[in-house]
Image 1 (cartoon, rainbow, N blue to C red):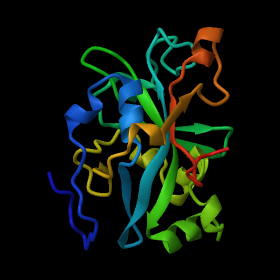
Image 2 (tube, one colour):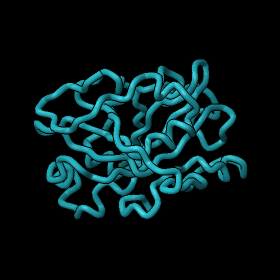
Image 3 (cartoon, helix red, strand yellow):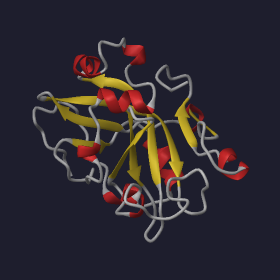
Length: 206
């Protein structure tokens, strides 16, 4: 399905439901190089995903879903391809996407983007931060794209103002993986290599 034009100049198509309806770790890995696009201030803004990490359900002590379904984590249990936006530390939004096979639970946290479109708009959202500090972390990219509770649980396969689209294929050697960043839980959860990033990309979080 072609994404709504709205003067869009990026030649790409929305990622389909089937892309998200797989194991969260696989979706996280294959999201690298895909594009996040947000209609903001009359134009498309966003960039390519360079870092993402996966979470599952009650088998993953690092996951919000570990202790079962709540009002907050409900999107993780819902239809794949929907957003899961939550607030942390009383100041930051985190942009996740429900990703799991039928009957399972899971989500992918988008940790970093390479900014490509609407850079000036994103800089205004970030208080004039330089390009290098614009989207190199989950809180930063959410602020740059003005992602908040109003976009929680929306369908990325259909929403007019927020979507993920096809991007570039990456060679296996370009992708790195390792433990997730500062996660809670037991040693098994903390050791799982479910964080994926593009090697030597300057926008990967630190």
